[in-house]
Image (cartoon, rainbow, N blue to C red; front, side):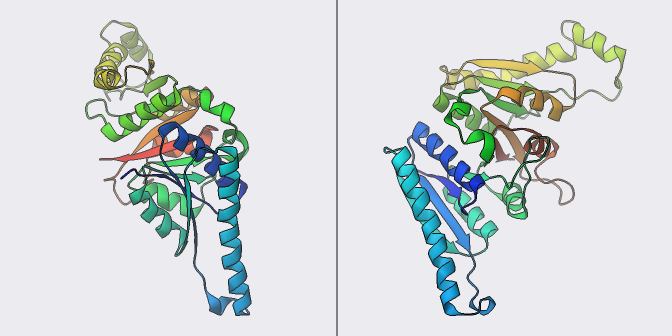
Length: 290
């Protein structure tokens, strides 16, 4: 069974932008698009049953109008809709189990052009078992933004995340764009941060040279699997989030990982994913992996 690309829709400009982005992605991957709206109907909170009916009618209208708009814009697209009565987070997490990716709109953006994640977005990003793509309304609703390269941030080259690389390479192949793999080597505590690090980095076989070789080795089987995808490397001795953000400046899609077995305390999506979500304008895919 072909798994769809699913969009959480609430009628906001951000969710409509997410639906438009997801529609183009579904066409590129030749898969269906599924639009979902979630609400909990609570009759005791409204003055009359008519108000409850009005809420349900509005939700169905949001789905219907979005479906009609997307069908008109992309006639070849296969679209389905579903309205589910439950909390938004639980509905979206359940839908993520059945989708090849879940697409959500950001709740806005700040002066630094990053995402402002609401509580639902945070829960879904931290718990979903499928990739979650966050889309902003004011930059990524244009199809022209799709042409940039796919940037993927890689953390541990000794234990590369197959789901992360599979998603990144498949996305670049579907888009017909290049892929840029970004890595910031972990500096041994002995070296610290100073002139010695720069000297080692400039030497053949130093920290940077070793990291470049390790990155090339990690990517070799994926380049063989996706020979049509041009691949570039970026290796810098710097803070990982900064390295990814610099590469993401002109990206069409940024792909970062989230380890599924993290301690309960701290940022559950990881520091790099957290920084990228808050400081980049491109759509961001967060891919869970062990």
